[in-house]
Each structure stands twice: as C-alpha cells, then as structure tokens.
Amino acid sequence: MGTKLSAVEQIVLELCRENVHPISSGALQAKTPEINEDYVTNALNSLLNKHRLSILQQDGEISFQYISEGEALKLKGLSPEDMLIYQQIAAAGNMGIWTKDLKLRTNLQNVQVTRILKTLEGRGLVKNVKSVQHANRKVYMLAELEPAREITGGAWYTDQEFDEAFIDGLRGFCKNYIREEGAATLGDMVEALRVQRVSRLELGPGEVQSILRTLLYDGALERRERGGEEVFQAARDTAPETTAFTAIPCGVCPVSQECTDDGPISPSTCPYYKAYLDF
Image (cartoon, rainbow, N blue to C red; front, top):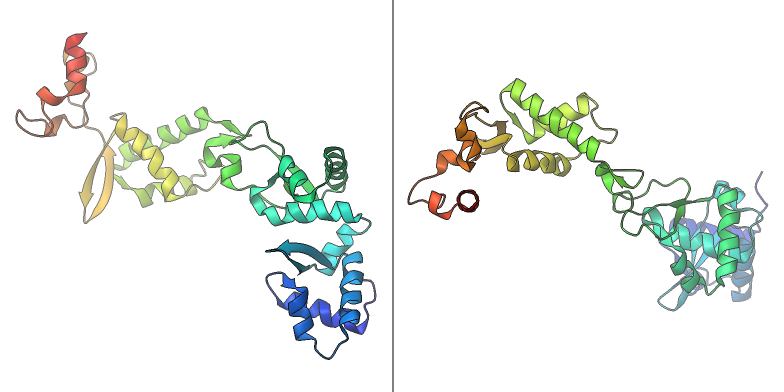
C-alpha cells in the first residue's frame, strides 16, 4: 500500500501526471490559484521526499516530473544525491550517459558518483553498457532499457565486437537464396531472412540492402529493373573458373556486358584493366 497523500499533494501530483513533459513550479502555481503558495511548495517538497516527483532544471527554471507509485517503491530509501544521479540517467534514455557527464551535470565528486552508481547497480535500477563508439567510456542507462543501435552497433556487432562471421553468413544465405529462386527483390530478402530466422535481430530494409550491395560489388549478384522495382539475380558466369579468360578483369567484371569501345564503360577507361596490364 502506498504512502498516504494529503489533499494538496494529490492535486499537485495529478497536475504533474497529466503533463507528458515536466511542469514548472510557476505553471503549477498558476493552475492552483485557490491554494496558498506555501502549501503548494510544501506539497512539492513532500512528494519529492516520497519519490513521487523528480526535479529537473530546464532553461534555468525548476520543473517537476511525475513518478508512478510502482516506480516510487523501487526508489524508496535513495538519498537526494542518489536520486540526482538516477534522474540524469533516466533522462538520457536508451542512449545512456557517460560517467564524466554525470559528474559535470550533478556537480558531485568522482568518488560520490562512483559510490552512487554502485548503489543503483546493486539495486538493479541502472546498468553499465559498452559503447562501440567509445570503447573506453563507462555509459549508464536504466536497467530495463535496450541500448540504442548507436551504442551497440546494431546487427553487425555482437557484444560490441564487429561480427564478421555473422555478416559472412548473411551474405551466403542471400546469395544462395537468390540463386535458387532465380531472382528476388529487397522486400523478398527481408521477408526470407525474417522467416528463416537467420538473424538474432530483425533486419530492416536498410541493413539487408547493405548486404546485397556488398554482393553486387563483389560480382556475385546483378541487378535489373522489373516494373520499376530493383530485382537482384545471380551474376551470369561468362566462362568456367579454370579458363585463362577469368584471369583478366573482363572475365569477372559485373558490367562487362555494358563495356564498349566508345561508351562510358570501356577498356580505355577501365582502372582494373590498366592495373592488370601494368602488372
């Protein structure tokens, strides 16, 4: 059972709950003209002590954010300094916040920040996550949040390490699927990867497009237009791998069919052919 609230506390708390964004003390006073200003101030202080409100500073003005009763129970027993750190971490969302930024924003000493983080972690309120962008930084976020892809690196990273084997597996699946089906659109590949559960994460069109692009650049796939939509198909083999023709760039060039003497793609402008002759 939750802590009993006074009538003024209930009014103030409800006003804060109705606001999606933090509400300033001035706005609260304006919404409660019939209540003495001192009573409102006392109610705010009491609600802060009961962890039913969090306090923030926005544009030089003090504002208050509603905290549910369930959340308040989790925060019971935390000191004002603990709450200060917790609120900064909560405000950072799934991007998390660096320990150095916590120190700067709270004006607490490094030893205090370290102690408080240990307390919050011990109570299961926050967690430390590794950032692929800043490997040496300690980043914290609320324990129940999933880190943003900017932090984890998205599908291409496992435990913040670039997962080359996973990418090779995706490339192999896409190449084999397209070869067996004859052709496939980007949408076809997104759906096939989802149905076959090839990835531990659901891959979006942009990520699958990146895999298909690498296969295009490697000459394993070709693309064409069909009804205004891009279609991928297995690259046509121009000759067996064992012939001498494949030793020169033309033998494995994905655009060799478009190569002409006087066109934009020609032997005279081909950097690969020039490098081959120089060699």
